[in-house]
Image 1 (tube, one colour):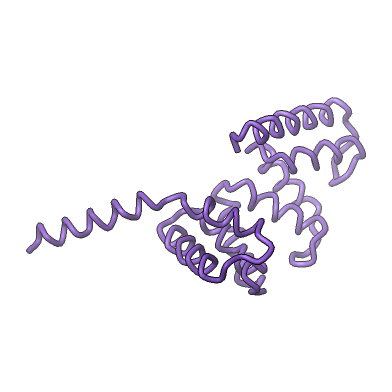
Image 2 (tube, rainbow, N blue to C red):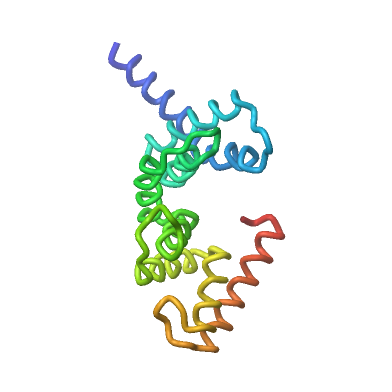
Length: 171
């Protein structure tokens, strides 16, 4: 009896591991669709919830997108904690989202220093848009940063490298 239970647990864990990371790939086409299929939305949401419950921070971020309008739901109060958790865990898209919202979005209080810090974290993880925003901020002396042409050029070069990787299908 005990070995049967252990076998079932191992089988379940193996099935979970095989599914890990599928959430992002499932959500991406739904984000791009004009009218996503409701059954596909439900299946993707269930998959993301399962992966997030298993500890996948990126799946938590993807799940937050459902709360921010994917499939017609609008519950930002449910999305923000998921995004914050993902950002702290190192998900660059979540870090960028927090930066953007803290800089200029309506869902979080304006906090230029926090926005800058999240942009820096996302840029360090090669988030193209974060690198672009930091290049602009250093060029214009925004986000509490001093004008620094060298840093602006550095972030523009990082942005260009990110774009080349995206075009090559690496990200």
